[in-house]
Structure formats: structure tokens, C-alpha cells
Image (cartoon, rainbow, N blue to C red; front, side, top):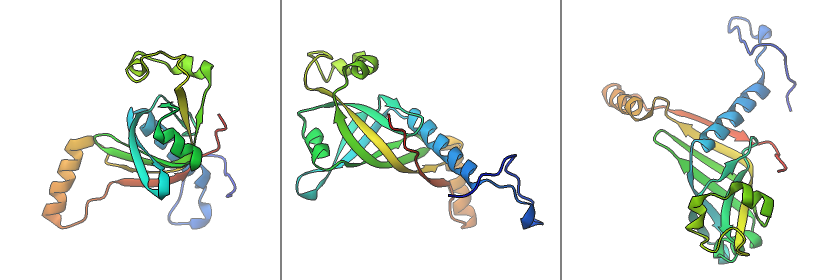
Length: 188
């Protein structure tokens, strides 16, 4: 792990010895960006490893994003995806918006925490669990995020369209933002 340097992250390109650039600050900023992008997304595809090693992806609604990037979802504890996570906890969560995409890798577990179920319960969840929040099949899927990668096209669709037109006119490849981050252990 690199040492942290206090003060603003400034780099004088004319003298490399005067750099006060803090790589840890970059990492923190990337984690914050990932968390922000996840919080701006409601719907995701959660991919787990099913029987015989087959990948299976299911649409799931993000209920909460912790500051460390850990994610909470409602899940039916008797559903095949809950069984798959019990057998192999490795998962990937993918989200997208008009101008950004995030892929989160981590380990998942199905939990039955009534206090947290009460806290996260909302009218939309009723559609999936008509017997209410006390139904024994109601569970939570906690994804403990290990790493994430995102692609961002700042400015949304209009900026992307302008960039694509510029690419066609100049022959230069389109470049959006892309970062990877190891996410901190949140131990929720």
C-alpha cells in the first residue's frame, strides 16, 4: 500500500520530485464515484453461478448501497438464485444508465434480518412478496463488493452523440472514462 501525502494532489510536470500526488486519494475518489453511480441506478442484473457451473443472470432492484459499495436486494429464499448463491457465493452485479455502466464483483449471501427487512421494505416489494414482509421466504441478498469497474460518458447522450460524430469526422477513436477500483471491506 502506498504512503499517503497530506495536502492537495498537485503535480508539477516540470519537476517530478515535487509531486504531492496521492494515489490513495485517487482510489478513494474512484470508490466514491462507483458508489455514486450505483446509487443513481435502481435496476441491475445479478449474475451468479448455477448448477453445473452455468452463469445465470436475474434482474434485481437495488434496495441500498453502502458507502463501501456493498449492495442489498430482496430475494426469495426458496428461489433458485438463492440456492445458487448458497452453493457458490461469487456474483457480479451490472448496472447501466444513459451514459454510464458499472460492473461489481463480490461475494453474496442470503440473510434473514427482520429489522433490516422492515427498514428496506417498500410498496414495490409487495408485488414480489404478496404475503408481506413476515413471509418466511422473504430474504435479503447482501453482495459484499470486492471490486468494480465503470465506464462513463460524461455529458450524457448529447455529448456521446457529439463525440461519435467527431470520431467519424477525425478518425480518432471515441474515448469515455474508465476506472477500476478495489472496494473497501464494509463489514455491514
